[in-house]
Length: 117
Image 1 (cartoon, rainbow, N blue to C red):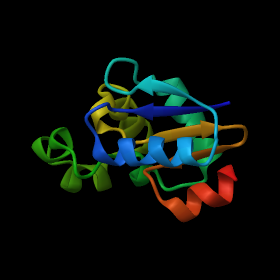
Image 2 (cartoon, rainbow, N blue to C red):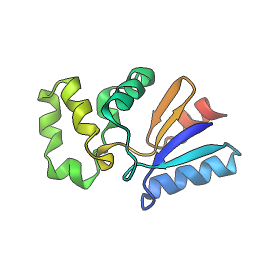
Image 3 (cartoon, one colour):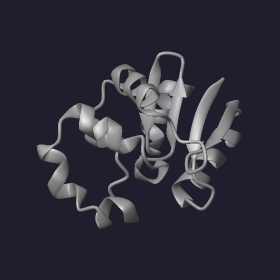
């Protein structure tokens, strides 16, 4: 069963869960704000994903903007970025989907269809 890290007030998360339900895909929801992944877990997800680390950041979120991360991230090491991501679930792009051998960030229906159907 896949894990879906979501935030209950996020409209993208709501769309994603609706899509999973409509497609009969079983999942476990994890509240990304209350139970966000730690640094070690994020490091594993990043390695499995094959995605650039920037795709793990919620670039439209308030904490991202308040911290000025668009200017800071390019000068930070991967270790520093992963440590920062682990401090606040609201910095993590959502929904974050973790399955057997894959990780998806955000809701892109084409990507989800390719991996989950």
